[in-house]
Amino acid sequence: MLAVTDLRKEFGGLVAVDDVTFEIADGEIVGLIGPNGAGKTTLFNSITGVLEPEDGTHVEFDGTDIVALETHDIARKGLVRTFQIVRVFNEMTVLENVTTGALFGNDESISRDEAEERAREALEFIGLADKADVLAANIPIAQKKQLELARALASKPRLLLLDEIASGLTPGEIAELTDTIRRLRDERGISVFWIEHIMDAVMSVADRIIVLNSGRKLAEGTPEEIRANDSVVEAYLGDEA
Image (cartoon, rainbow, N blue to C red; front, side, top):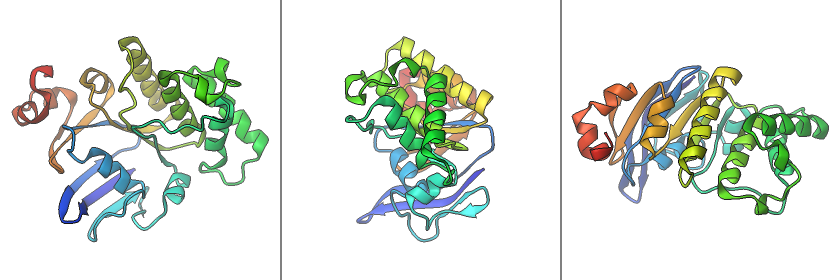
């Protein structure tokens, strides 16, 4: 589904992502971990058109090179992301927020009524249906993260990129989130690429883990293989392994 080859991003001579290559298959949940400053969010931004990667980078989604596309065009193809810092429209209701996801998703012919119906379905799936008419400004951070996930779901993604969506949540909220991510794949057929620092969360649900360190791919494998990798333990996991 997603094939990234030699992705490189520099900032004034500083190499933030250093020739990273990987693939994500249809139906996979893949975790992306690494210490702060490893280049994880820069990698996401370079894939989704927020940043322009260096020449020689190839990013193919469903066999189409998307490097030159704008962010909204990439989203319309079904590659959608959330952000590390929650970005909701506080002056709009929860339902209105999710409706925007449907309106600007990968179905350009959708009507406002159809978009609202899809938004209500997404809220029901995520568990926010009872908050539909509440202003987004008036819900707690955990529900804002659910809201951003529901908005992404309403856009009908095929591959969903999640950027530290579990940070700041309680253990109970994290357990609900990991269950939701698993259901996104199992019930909706959505593949997931997930940046996360909370190891128990990502290790419990991911089929495969990619590890970045100083912009380079340090390791790739199953959660069990990553936990047993001495280089990963030294660079990142430490006592958490």
